[in-house]
Amino acid sequence: MPSLVRKVRTSLSIHARRATIGLLDGGYASIHTGRSHDFDDLREYVAGDDVRDIDWKASARHGAPLVKRYVAERRHVIRCVVPTGREMAASTPGGERKADLAVLVCGILGSLALGHGDEVALVSGRGGRVTGSRALATESHLELLLRRIDADPTPAAPPGDVVALLEHVARHERTRSIVLVVADDGVEADRVDPVLRRVRVRHEVLWMTVADVDPSGGRTVRDVARGTLLPDVGSVDPGLVALFEASETERTHRLEQCLRRLGVSSARVTCEDDVVLAVLDLLARHARG
Image (cartoon, rainbow, N blue to C red):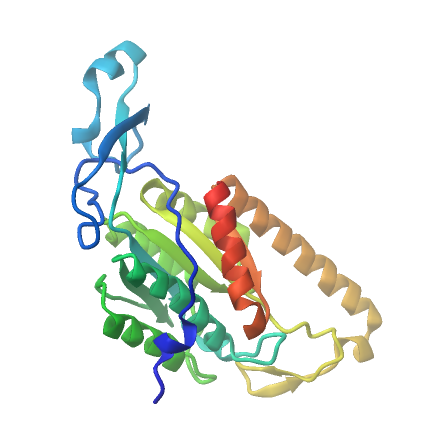
């Protein structure tokens, strides 16, 4: 089988904008000699912060606990979060399988990470089961993770749940990371907002949505859950098209508002040809903050 890593290599770069907390966050040790732990600023203590980072003198003057933040040259962990349920076996508007686009997105960011001496990891799952991998900085490890994303989604698989995967990250992944969420279309802002707030306390988050096929577009659409063809919505009742489009516009708008409010950079991909530009857009948004 051809290597999935070779398929997705490109020459992008990753920018981490968030100041690190604590003196143990590391410093690109595999590429550069020396480490930088320059003091940056203070911010109020948040549940989950290390109490050793509290500046007690400044806290006494301020009247509330303040935590020291440092700017550090650091080794990143790029942690991909990908639900691998049956929805990722569905088609995109470009005709590809959604899992194929997820492989490309994670492969691009993973290749960039390896090029900088960073580590990659994967949190995936379906049907209530969550699998988390170790973070390693080897091409063979990235290949293994991409093959898992590629192989797991099938029409017969249970549905995925991105909220359950993010709950795993919030509870168990203590190493600070750049979390790349590659999610199916249809995520509801109300469900994802509480867990994203917890994840954002410790991690940076990037969000890539893999678009659904529009069932009102006059194309033949197959329901991956039932294996049946869906009727053309417009031919059944033209009024349903307007209702569907209004509902999807509102759902997408609420999710975008939620992500923007939490400081999560996001982008959307519809076909394989758009993946590189979508990743460029995502990284540019993240760098601008």
